[in-house]
Length: 64
Image 1 (cartoon, rainbow, N blue to C red):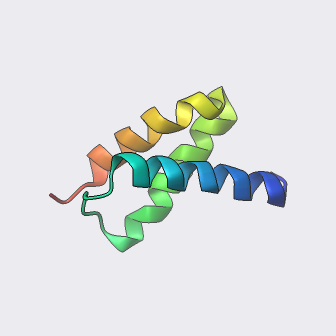
Image 2: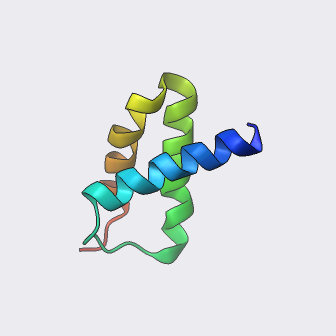
């Protein structure tokens, strides 16, 4: 992954997380797992796969 591409993907994941899961409580150590799920989804299926992958990861890792 190129650095510029990685930043772009991370920005997309962050925007998706904040748009849909703002009031969800997760452990600080699980943030990397959410970003990893978003990156894997982007690499396998493109930008449209980020939102469902992030939603699935958040639902699996949420505390409240």
